Image (cartoon, rainbow, N blue to C red):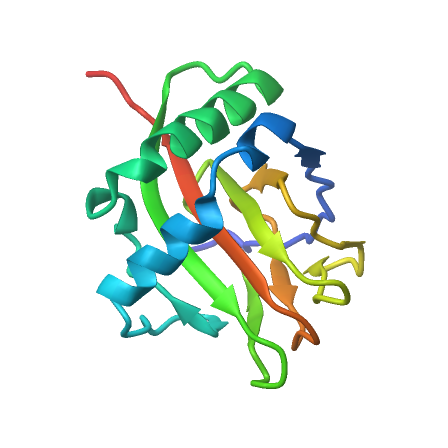
Length: 175
């Protein structure tokens, strides 16, 4: 390839974002489980989230998250008939507070196949989830959002609390 000229072309690929209120998830006190977790593990991890959040393997320390993880996996799998099973790669809890400049800087979750966020408790006026094209989704209690791991998103500083979990799924490759 010494004589080849490599060309670059940028393509704006539209990737879907899915969201829904899942009423039966609201019946479980996930806010209480997240608060219990935070009492046991109060130190915040360092990442693009500039609010309290757990380490990325919180599900290994709190088995009460397993039903929520399964529900999110099923939600993602039913959106796209993936060629292989989904495998949980990361799971973390977050609590954003009003007046603390809590926010998340623009980022994606690549190389994850799909990412999910479940909103356990949000206050009126909390910041939206904002995507790089300017589209916003204002979270509601019981809302589940799923999107391709390549989707760039952020959370502006919030004026109200947001208690949620996020997780990444990857395809389980078979040998």
